[in-house]
Length: 171
Image (tube, rainbow, N blue to C red; front, side):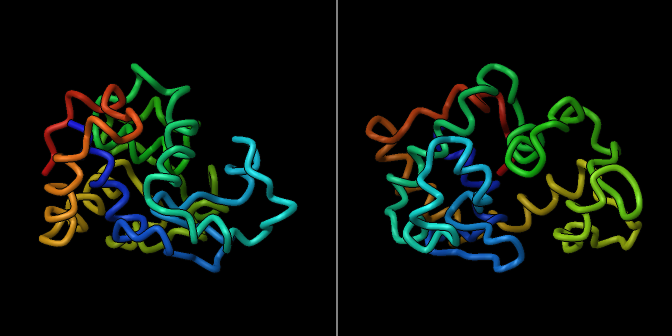
């Protein structure tokens, strides 16, 4: 199902390729950080705050997403896994453990927690895997579902992200 990534993208950007988080310049439908795109070969010197990246079409941004997700092919089989790879790839091994801590204030990956406290709706001082799943489920509302219906009709022409989460049933 090529629409599975839309669960995460809905939470990250409301599936908006122009989305911008000034806290670190996360940009686009996937909310890529500048350093992440640079690591994928994006010319960060020409576009340090990703303004030109945000002007790309969804299809053009998904070409970068394909590069980003391809190293995880075969290891992502859930919304949790897809979100972990998007948010903090080094924590992908936690995907099957909903109560596992992804990042926490004053602890592991404190910098990620500080930039993403909105995930911690329970106020625990940490983000757990279930928080990411819940964020994706909350964001996958009528607008995201309408986009998914349009995307589903275009799946054969879109970048191939389907092997990443083929067993996913959220939504």
